[in-house]
View 1 (cartoon, rainbow, N blue to C red):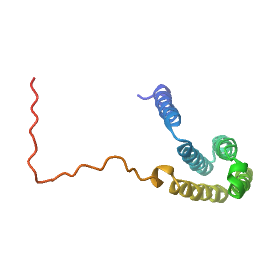
View 2 (tube, helix red, strand yellow):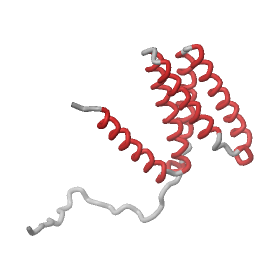
View 3 (tube, helix red, strand yellow):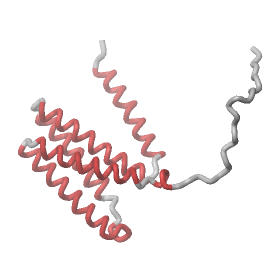
View 4 (cartoon, rainbow, N blue to C red):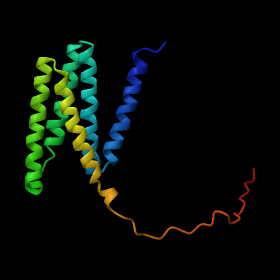
Length: 157
């Protein structure tokens, strides 16, 4: 009943949603999206490892490594970020190496270790979100009396 064309359509729809999110995201949100992508790729790798699907496992781990190396690590500004950026660079290098070892030796604990590191970094990154740290002091919210009668709105057909 549902063939590969529906699966392809759903994947295309999801891809458009992700691309739209990327276009409209702040630089801070993009980093969160990279963490999410790597975490999901590692979830998929663990599933493929359990199912002994070697090719799919390798593809998912390669995707996670690419996100770490070409997204997270490449976005580091070591001059502006100083010691924190240098430490993150070293950590990202460790993660990639650990994932490579986990792939070669078929070790789920390596995937779990890196996934936990990514989750910790993601939650730390979310905690410093610029949106959360700014208090909007535009116009004050109007005071509304919940018991006051409200004007009825009528629509004519």
